[in-house]
Length: 335
Image (tube, rainbow, N blue to C red; front, side, top):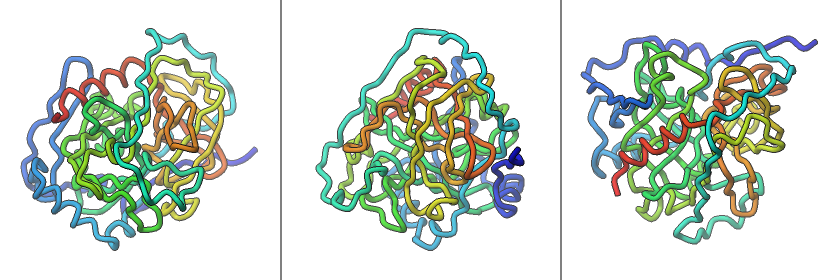
């Protein structure tokens, strides 16, 4: 029997997660009655990133050197890995879906794209309360206002007793330092209150609302397109494709994928087989992934895992909670 290993952050990042941050007062986050929490995105010194000038400063903050030195963020598993398939509960509501959307602009950079890469998927970079730099994975999701990027809750907030991350930036289809579609800076961050207050892995999901940016100054979904989303589709899915930037494959510099069926992992979580580890956190699990256009339907995000590089990882099951967070973020988005 293989020994159980658990994902964990490096010592420097683990320290960053407990050290008190800058003394700048942070405005109290807003929480709604359906379990969602939001805060305005901020710079290291506490300024709200509410205009293009400050957003440009954040983009300039992320030099190639800072991006290269960012620690791939992941959390330990919530429990030991097991191959046992748990009986899956019935969905608690009707199945629903948001359809994918194509980008508004035609890309001239896709001649070198690999079939396992999607321009809707990218790396996110942010600063920790101690001033350290870290990274996760994320993906765009279609909506009427075209501004949403989905990731894990622990990629925007530390969880129980912690703080929101700052200088939050998304780089679609990042590859070995290249930013073919430019960068996008967060305007506002949203997460489930159960993650923010209690570090609940059942609701380890988040959505960032982005400023215009990138190579053409457009909205992020206009620039690279947006994945669809599905909720209440059941725990057992025959095939899902997970995409992200794992440090154990390509050093976190190249987008990788894995494919597997999914099954119930306990609580409101699903599990799949995958060999990706640190850095893939927040990357999408996609149903019906089309490797010709890089679009699919998000039905979870990478949250945590065991047996790194040779095992499984878990993600939150997408039920009415993700639809609530999605509607919440879209309602906060500027037109």
